[in-house]
Image 1 (spheres, one colour):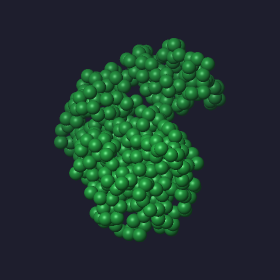
Image 2 (image 1 turned 90 degrees about the vertical axis):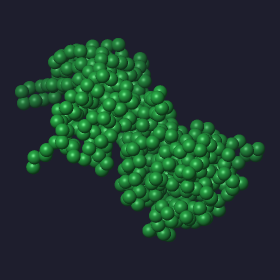
Image 3 (image 1 turned 45 degrees about the vertical axis):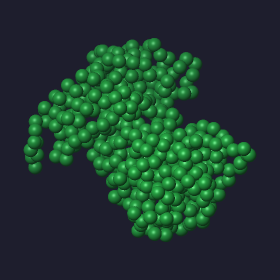
Image 4 (image 1 turned 135 degrees about the horizontal axis):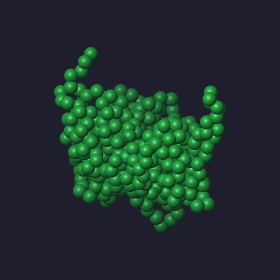
Length: 471
């Protein structure tokens, strides 16, 4: 079958070439056995090394803090001499090994170690550091991951054209969400992402494009009571038919939850790593969702013990990205989540996150999200998306907490104070926030669904408003 294009695809590629190079310098890295070609103007070392590792079987290990700009131009250069010219200012080791071939013995490069003087303990594969490189758009204050864009092609465009677009961009396809047709592209760290996205969005064949937006975790409020408290954990095995809850947050501390309560786990920022939690926030939310911690003003019931799917989507600095969230949501669906708790929010909406949540809701996932801990009255996302139940916070008195956000996007207010055995960058104690309310909403939603498996968002909202909180 011959596909007729509604426009000249070469025109798109030429336009994309102009758009990219108006915002970033040229970049090329190719290898042919032990010969290397590099054309780079002020390209980050991590980008070069990550590209090298992807295109070969060379293992690259580098200190995350070492990431200078590299400029180099040479064609078909000896591999060792070429790398030495780039790495000479840095402490490094090139590891070679001999391998027999049909024509004799061939020496090949197997590993590169780049490290601070006298310290090789902190080296990791490039791209494996889970902390995101965050930038802020001065025009609207939105946050995004530097050097990355997300695009979607129009329905009548052959996906194979992405490869041609990438070649012209000088970009690299990092990942693809085939279900939603979203492509994640790495461009130069020097690219002016907001301006690049605006120009790409207007090109023929591109349905939409946006930065890989970044979102901050919801900062909880910690209270120091007059008398010392003793936080208690109440773990009980989930009953038969209990509904799994996915908690997308800062992770889960090792040993924080019994094996029977933890159904699955993933580090969405670094899938090769074992899940952890340097912030404590994710562990707090997982304990509430599981029913091990009950907020103030709530009577504990036996049907509120739920299995949890813990997903680390936030880095050590408290940021996540559209891509990390989409990866986490995909993992949640694949592992049978019926409820998802999102205890974070941002004023920046994303078409791609909205589409991902709409798709998840169409598969039966009930999504709850915190409304925010600043009473601005302005919508925050994901709570304000149509597919999500937005949750505000109640104080122990039963009235709206003074710091809860409010507005039409808030569907219900639920208890938001709890005595936590795990602190957020601090000691255990009493914490407050819409994060707690959202995790509790997930807990109660799962309990309701275990008895009413056919219930949808409407029935769950009616249950929450009549039994748990108020508008």
